[in-house]
Image (tube, rainbow, N blue to C red; front, top):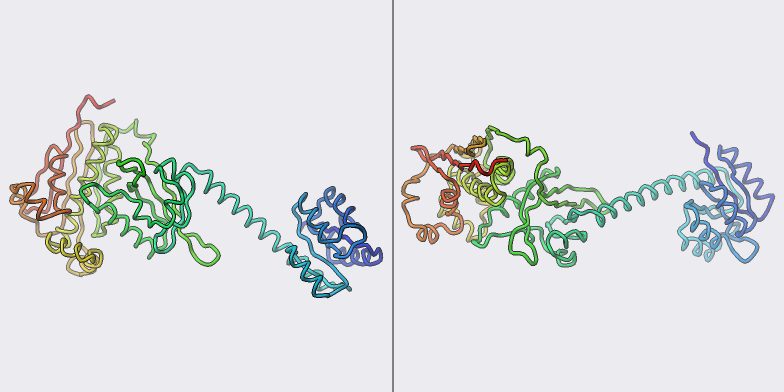
Amino acid sequence: MKQKKIFIVEDAQIVALDLKNILEGLGYIVAGIAATGEDAIAMCEAVEPELILMDVKLPGEMNGIEASKEIRKKISVPVIYTTAYSDRNIIDEVQKSFPFGFVIKPYREKDLLVAIETAFTRFEYEKKLEESERKYKSLFEGSNDIIFTLDETCTVQTVNWAVINHLNMPPEEMVSKTFFDLLFTSPDGNFKEIEFVREKFENFQKTRRPINFKTAFISRFNFEPIDMNVRLEYINVSGGDLIIGRAFRVVEDELLKFFISEKQSFSMGTQLFLVGDVTDRMTRNLVRYLDPDTVELIRLALVEIIINAIEHGNLEISYEDKSGAIEKGNYFDYMSGRQANPQYRDRKVRVDFEINQDEARYVVTDSGAGFDYRNFFEREMTEINEEYTPHGRGMIMAKKIFDEMAYNEKGNQVTLVKKINGSQQS
């Protein structure tokens, strides 16, 4: 183990030499001895000791406390004060300078060893803490991503200045809002995206595992949503746990230019919070062949279809029951009850999809009893708006977005096809 260098500041030569012998006997290196504060400043800057034993009372115009302050302006080093006096006023004055230790003369070897090793441990801890704070500050203030913290109620506690660049919102305006207040709601009042995020957040609080998801934020001077990827995780801080979040713009995958086709299948349960991730995965490569706005419309339509498969298919929740639960404000409790019911909890929604240069094809199958889709599509849009607002228009939207939409005879499987114009290929 490397021997630590200690500098002694003591005006009594005999005391200083005795202290030197004790320190060397304990395995330390004495880097130098100074009798005045002025000499200590010059010598410590030259030899850069790893700890200073500083007498409080020194001859000359500068006492030990003042000398320590000047030394620490030049080098970072812990200081332990020594004094032959145990006067309360002296101790109070020393404490105000935030020392790393305090030893009363005459020195006892045990007291010195404890004070010195404690000072070294505390100094190392404070250095690591300062470095951590510097890194955090650099990340927090220097990042181009939105970095924010939340409490357990999902209320924003802090946020960096990047929020201005992305959302045209000053940090002080974002603080004290809930995270959900910052999410975009479509003009027709469709709250499904926020429902996904809320369920994800509740699951995140239970598991305390980091989560990643994509969502749309509001912008202060723009009515268009701002799509961003979000990561949330718990960090341990003094006083408890804190949620730190990072939001960053969705960017095109560099490998996308090599994409030709893909074919995959997903089998998911009744958890709504999975729908956003699944639909994002099933549509992200479409930007190779279709413009981003069209891809987003396809994703939103798939969201609606899969939610219908979960809610009205697997969980057998009627439109009337859902409307009533939303009006009463207990929709999530109602959903949780259905999800926990042994009759429904093990049901799955299967999604098979294929994307190639000619088309995007999605087949969504639930485990429910099916529904009368013929009667549904024969009704007028105004009638559907009146009876199913805001959650009954997903299938109408999907029918308008996709070129083909076909149900099986039972009504628990729908095939959606979007034709790809060859002129959009590159």
